[in-house]
Amino acid sequence: EVQLVESGGVVIQPGGSLRLSCAASGFTFDDYPMHWVRQGPGKGLEWVSLISWDGDTTYYADSVKGRFTISRDNTKNSLYLQMNSLRPEDTAFYYCVKDLGPAAIEAYFDYWGQGTLVTVSS
Amino acid sequence: EIVLTQSPATLSSSPGERATLSCRASQSVDRHLAWYQQRVGQAPRLLIYDASNRATGIPARFSGSGSGTDFTLNISSLEPEDVGVYYCQQRSNWPPLTFGGGTKVEIK
Image (cartoon, rainbow over all chains, first blue to last red; front, side, top):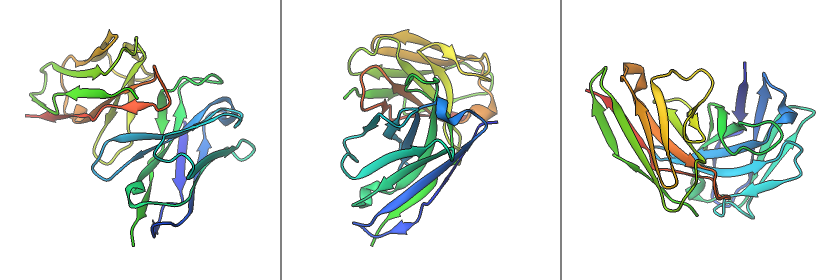
């Protein structure tokens, strides 16, 4: 069974930094690209970032480019999101999401974690 | 950036009725479109990808159609567990990968 478990969400002041983690199990982690997708409370879905299976290629939404960094450790079956210069509009549930296709980026999301809440507020 | 517009905002139907959800893209996405269901308090679930392919474990009452800019998700016979918000998502032209604003499905 595929499991994705996020951690690291907290209440943090604007301008602060935070690292989210995602522990993956139930599939061959290093075969798949991975994403972060966020959802503001009561709002819709927003794609945040993507990393290739080997970690060599990354993509970001314009809203987070230059502030957030996605990374992965395939030896630990883990995905990360380093979030710097946080803003109130970054407040959201952050989901760790598995890409549909092995190796190649399919850019569809077939398994989601339960999310971790990041609240940016003074 | 490709903008996806979903309609209606809210759909209310009786159990057993057919539900039809629409997603319109601001430019052609060919067939590179997916649908997700999000129940209250849960993470989204992939239903359909590449416009009409059902994801693993998805019941046959869910079907997708369309190409270019106009897409439809049909639920042939609505069941109580189908209540939730449904999102479309495109992967034709990215980054960014984009979602529609969602359609809320309610049971009368």
